[in-house]
Length: 221
Ligand SMILES: [Zn+2]
Image (cartoon, rainbow, N blue to C red; front, side):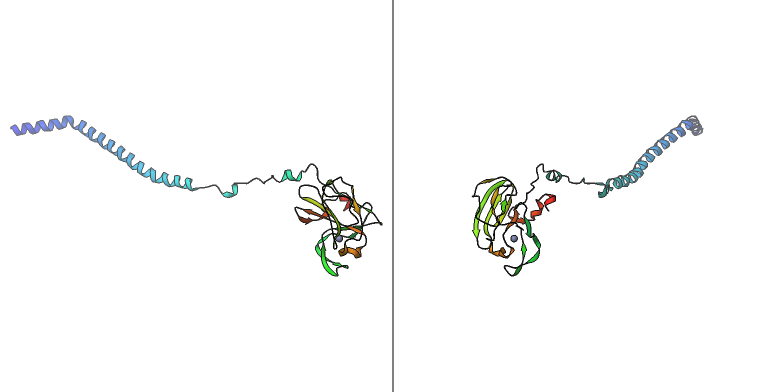
């Protein structure tokens, strides 16, 4: 009897609170599912996002897109405000032998092929040899092959040389203006004696022979 009452009480208890117990279980279950879903979702999302981030991190722009602008630093050098222009070393002179640094020419005097590192200007007997540009007399010398030689320093490594002169009309250190007389044409250079009276005119820049035509005006070339 007693146990039956207890049983009924238990049944009544469950009957009374079953609804709340089920509700509680359901709430716990839902809560657990949400928690699991959140945890799993976090775990699922990270692997998806990490490779994506890695892909974006490893993508580098092509090197072709890096365009280096051209270097224009050399441009100001070309805009020399006062370019050097030579006048002719012999007024009314004639071209006896041209500058031929690239090809060998036959020397009738030395009986051999050789380059000609300057320009030979001839003219009438006693024609004056003139300075082609302002400068200072660097040297006055004589040797059998080149005859009387005057060199003029024009600054910045530019030097002009006048060989096969008669007696030089200038001295070392003398300040020279363009067109000043340096001497006259002659046959003092035995190496070019067969060319007749002339001046052998050559140009050096920093000690190296350069083409004299680089410094003559267009009309004189
Ligand atoms: Zn010559």
